[in-house]
Length: 335
Image (cartoon, rainbow, N blue to C red; front, side, top):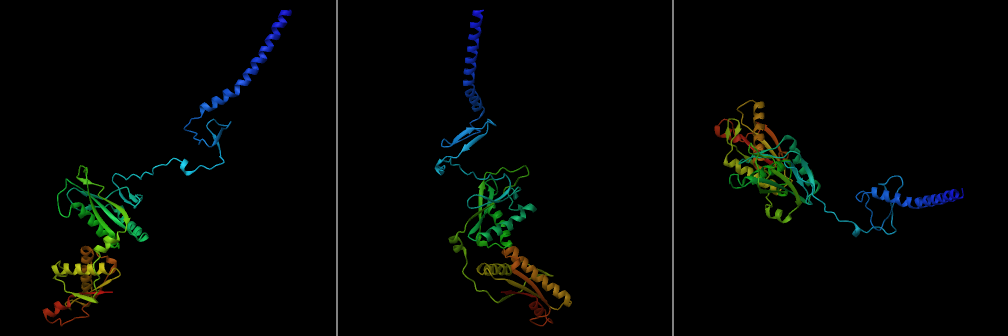
């Protein structure tokens, strides 16, 4: 019995000792278990910042602010990457290479042709460029027109020809031609099965090059009060002649030299028809000349007004053929 009691008390003592050792070790084991569940990628804390693990979640770190703030030099510098360009979209970038606007579709062309195919939704690009240049008067737009070395050799190169078409559209929108630069860009182009390429044009906005503008700005041209033009007619249509081309060039020079100038075209006729017919005919003469000035001289149609005086203001008698021809005229009035 004595030996049994000794053994029993010995067992009790060792049991308490074992429990004491167990509870002393247990917190450290739990702490290790929690820290093993926390991924270094999930919790990144600077060495100057104290951290502790919450009891609620092993992946939640409570960051206590240090007494001294982190200096900018302690932060990791990151390189700002440019936004990627779409493979076949129409884009415009600013001087700092940020995207000003982007369309999912692009302007396309067929190999060895200068004609551009502009999807209808893309026509908004003209007003977007105009609005941007209005907002930033110290900027100019560069038209980047692509072409391939495998295309036909012409002068000016076919890329330049495509770019000039876009410039003409922008001028007709009301953008000063001096703020538009056309650049042809030769590329290693992979044409599609129908020989088309859908990323023909891109735009870049650059600081206004005042030296370049000064070099191309024509000397001031005195604005005439009026010019009387006698077209060559085919029935009721104006024919494209050398004197008409010279007139278009002259008017374009006046407009370039005097950007605030506007023009009124007044059509006059003889008395060979009724008063109403002659009024309509005179208006037709004026509209046809405005079309030539706009399409061949890149003159903004909004700056050209058309009127008709019909047969009401003859210069000579309509009784002779010579007098009748003298009365069929268009008067250009500048203001």
